[in-house]
Amino acid sequence: MTVNDRSVSGDIDPRTLLVHFIRENLNLTGTHIGCETSYCGACTVMFDGRTVKSCTVLAVAADGATITTIEGLAKNGQLHAVQEGFWERHGLQCGFCTPGMIMAAVGLLEENNNPSEDEIRHGIEGNLCRCTGYHNIVKAIEYAGAKLRGEEPPPAEWEVSA
Amino acid sequence: MFPRKFDYVAPSSLDETVDALKGAGFAKVMSGGMSLLPLMKLRLVSPELVVDIGRIPGLDQISEEGDMLTIGALVRHYQTAGSEKVPAALAAAAAYTGDVQVRNRGTTVGAVVHGDLAADQPAAVLALGGVIVVQGPNGVREIPATDFFVDTLTTAIEPDEVATAIKVPKGGSSAYDKLGRRGGHTDYAVAGAAAWVKKDNGNITECRVALTGVAGRPTLAEGTAEAMVGTDGSAGAIAEAASKAADGVSVLEDLYGSEEYKAHLATVYAKRALTLALNE
Image (cartoon, rainbow over all chains, first blue to last red; front, top):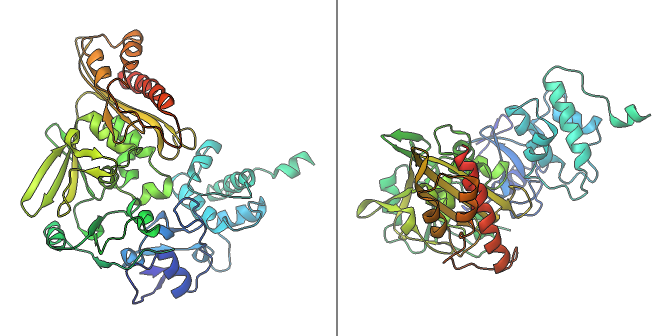
């Protein structure tokens, strides 16, 4: 399979889950293992251009697929707009859900780069943040959407209220 | 957390799939794996052989033939949800299935064949009068949805058969609505209903309503359907018919609601689905 533009291979047990292959065989530990029951979304990666929960995909089923993980988003030292949004709008607290949350946001914005707040909230329905920091995550995705549209992102709330 | 050891094959055709299933011990067919893999990881199900049909070409199509629509075994929920060809009840049921990532990977046929008692798409297929196409050692057979759902997680498909498609008729108008376990439309249904109606000269000539999350399997609300036929589909007629939604249905209580509450939700969602269908 191709992971972050790199061709990789491995001889694995059929029961190896994609998330384990990514973390343990490829040492890409940015993709997190959270609930392992396909609820939390911390393990979200792009599989042939669409988000999936890599804890619920067999690695063998990804044979020949194109995978993008959180490590593959930044290009030439430049953060992806969604990563920048999370940075600028403080879209994380503990950070555990962040890689999956960012991948889900990338998937959402690739389909619709101008989502409403409601569409953003539904777009990340497959990802849980147990710090419940959803408010700033939504703001971060709004920021990234503006960036991707080539617009000036809305000012941060703390700048407005100051 | 990973499954018990199993053998894995990824056939490149349906014939090879049937060959792989023939004489296998406990084998499971996998398409998207969104229902099967969690069960295997929790070790509630431990097949000796997983037959992954994910690489078979041509199964990812939604095609029309006469007045029937065929949804191939690898059509994913997001495709069903986003297709203008798919009847509204099934498209909505697919849109309300799982979450974004699950809809990107899971398949409509897989969800129907899995037969969860609180899943969305089985009820839609039942209300639409769909058929499930299966292939086995004795060739291809079509099982009407009314005969398909035998009991909880149990369908009429044989262990040596693979579901290749679902066919649904295109006529009439339909809708699906539900109460999700996490509120709104999110997660499995606490209860939900799919409705399909056909009108002629302002009167309803045919009707089917199917419930999910109410009984041990997707179930027709026959009392409601019968009461709708011959009416003009007015709000009053819908309310009267929907009040019979749980009549004759073996309502089951679960973690999400008592028998009484589920029976109540059956009437509420039968009413909402019928109203939506008649305004489609």
